[in-house]
Image (cartoon, helix red, strand yellow):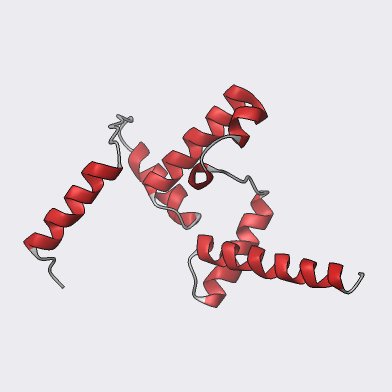
Length: 120
């Protein structure tokens, strides 16, 4: 379905008012590598690059500054086998990986809270 010109202007205005743009240059062929890596993890290339930057900043600046990072920029590293299990489960559930993991964490938090109430 084509996007109207008015809708595109509204999106562009929103992006201009809410986001900064940074252009990066990478060696030929790396763009595809980044896209494949991000896609395998259910991320956009932009999301992957943002996550990679935040992880590097966390390592560079120590745990204190990483803990003070904005919530939407927080990062959790998972072992590769956990990521693979999440990918398989998300695929079976027909969900994007971030949505699946978010739901799984919320469900487990509810179970843990219930277990605490029951004295378990």
